[in-house]
Amino acid sequence: MIRQTINLIILLILNISILDNSVQARMKCWTNNEGVKECGDTVPPEYTQQGYKELSKEGIVKDETKRVKTKEELEKEREKARAVAKEKEKVRKKQTHDKMLLETYNTIDDINDAKEQKIQAIESTIKYNKKRIIKLQYMLDNEEKSDADNQTLKQQIAENEKYIEYKIDEQKEIEKTYFEYITRFKELKGLD
Image (spheres, rainbow, N blue to C red):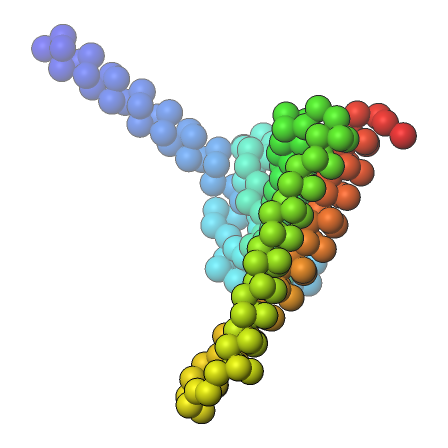
């Protein structure tokens, strides 16, 4: 009996507190189409997208629901977030690159040595391909071959010449890259 009475009292207290909280949270205020502030238990559906405030029975704002953003506003926010993320990624890559420079090279001479090694390796490849072109041209000029064989030799010569052009461009790119390395290395080390 006492237990049932205690349970009944607890249930009654819970119901009263729930009712009290729901009464406090039921007052909602919004602005209508004419700019007039209105309040009530529920926000009419046509105004829910515009945002509203929930007030306690003392008139204090307990919660505020912001208006729903337009597609254009949402797209602008996404674009801004993408731009911020892109900028962060750019900064991260620069920091990684700077760290690589400082950990890989001790002096500007080290950078120049690495550049020269790469340039020389490419130069060796170019020399080899030039010799190959000479050999192919010699075969084309001196031997009697069928038109198909001549065409094959001409194609091989053209491919080797194209490859040499590619390697020359690669050398130029290496020069440019290592110039940038040296410039950044000087900035990081505070050199003139």
